Each structure stands twice: as structure tokens, then as C-alpha cells.
Image 1 (cartoon, chains in turn red, orange):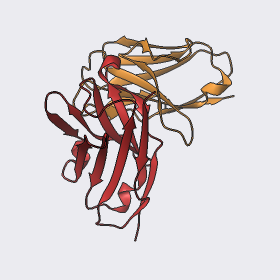
Image 2 (tube, each protein chain N blue to C red; image 1 turned 135 degrees about the vertical axis):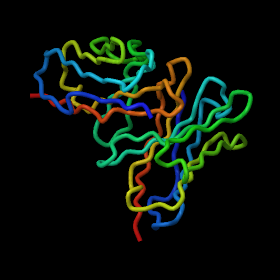
Image 3 (spheres, helix red, strand yellow; image 1 turned 120 degrees about the vertical axis):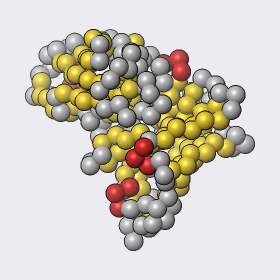
Image 4 (cartoon, chains in turn brown, blue; image 1 turned 60 degrees about the vertical axis):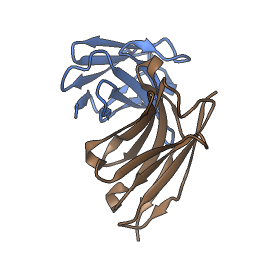
Length: 123
Length: 107
């Protein structure tokens, strides 16, 4: 059974960097049949896809235009996890953040999700 | 970015009713359309993928269909436990996008 376990601080100061980690069990971050996503949700934005990382003989990343200048998603093969870094945060980045697996076999529908991390941006 | 427009934004129906939710893509996405159910305080759960394939373990009263760039999620006989918000999401482009959601309430 695949599980995703999220970790990271719940409070970040404005202008600082938001960092979250998603630990994978039951699958591999290097799987050629999966993509590893970050999504966030807030009342004002609804569900917003932020980006993904995936391995297809080399590593690829795709990011949403809305955060492209501020976001980095990195795989960590040694720990079988992937991370989200969002720079220069503002209160508008306050949201529940999720990691999720997109599976090629299910048309990249996101079939496994982390538990969610509530992140508040405030001084 | 591909825009996904859902309708209605909310609906109220009785147990046993047939419920239909629509999602329209701003451009062709072939059949790369997924539907999710989300209950309060929980992560979204995949219901269908590739427009019409039911995810393992999802009740057969849920079904999806496609007509061009219009997609439909149907609940054939609404149950009390189906009270939730439903989202569509396209996986056609490298940059994924979600619809704004449809809240389904039980009368």
C-alpha cells in the first residue's frame, strides 16, 4: 500500500521560504510510471496545482505559471521523498498543502495523497 | 494554462436522485480528465480517470463521460455519504489545472 507522509513547519514569516517534505512508502520517487505533485488549497484559490517532479531516464520538473519564479521541487532518492520550497511567501500563500502521486496507469490521476499540511504565513 | 469550468457551483438533491456535474475545458484535453471527491478536512479522493474509468473501490453509481471538451460526472442514485465537493482536473498539459468545485448537499 502506497502512503505519503508530509512534514514541515506550520508557520512561516512573510518573505521567508516555505519548506515541506513528502516521504514515500510503498513506491519509489524514481518510478518511471509516476509523477510526484504538490497541490495547495485555500478558500480564495480552491485547489491549485503547484508543480511536479518525475523521472524518465532523467529528472524533470513542471511548475504552475503562478508560482514558477518562486518554486522548487526536488527529489531525494536516498530518502525516497520529495520536497517543496516556495520562496518569498506572503499571506496569500496561506493554505493547506498536499503532496500526491500521479500514476501513468491511471492517466496521471492523483490516486494517493498526503494527509495535508496547514501552512500559515504570518509575522 | 488550460481553464476548467465546472457547473453548477453547488446543488442540493434528495437521496436516490440522479445528479450530474459538468466540467468544460478551454481547449482540447482528449480524455485526460479526472474527477475527485473531497469531504471536509480530508484530502481529495480519485473517483474516475481518463474521463470514464472508475478508480478501484469506487461505487458503481459514479460514472464519467466525455463529449468533445465537455465532461460529465454522474451519480446515478445519490446516497447520504455522497455529500461532498467534487472537482475535475485535467492531466493533458504538463501544467495541471483543477475546476473550481461543485458542492453537493443532501436535502
